Length: 164
Image 1 (tube, one colour):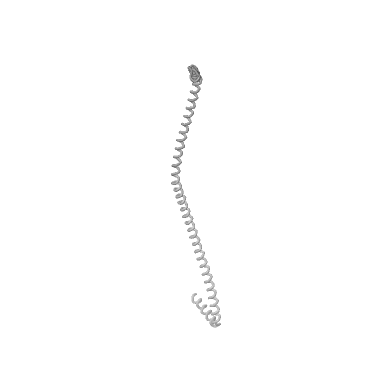
Image 2: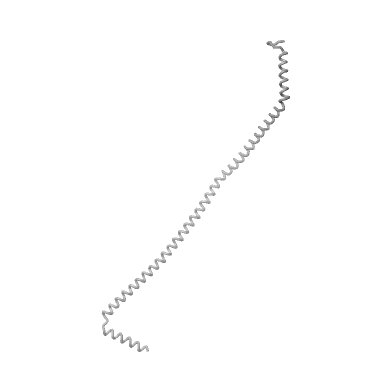
């Protein structure tokens, strides 16, 4: 029984050889191969679990950051409002201080003006009094005669006697 130059017995022998080889591989290499494949399966499963956990954490972080980003516009707007409000307060404070300072300067200028006016008026009055006295002395000296002078002295003396 030959088939293309080979006998069936040769095929059976090859098949038995192959079966023995597979049996030996399974007997001696089955457990290590099974352990290797099981370890490999567990390692891959653990890595997939870690990856899924990392993806879940990343998604949670993404959601957290998206919430923060959505609130960031509100926080920025609130910060802007607070800064503007604080700037307005500071502006009003500066304006109030400047107004108060200008008021004090006006008061001091008014006091200085009034004092200058008093000094000028006093000087003018003194000058008028001096000029009046000079003019009066000049007029008296021109119009008063020796007789008028003697008569005035006599009248004065008589008034003094009548008082005593």
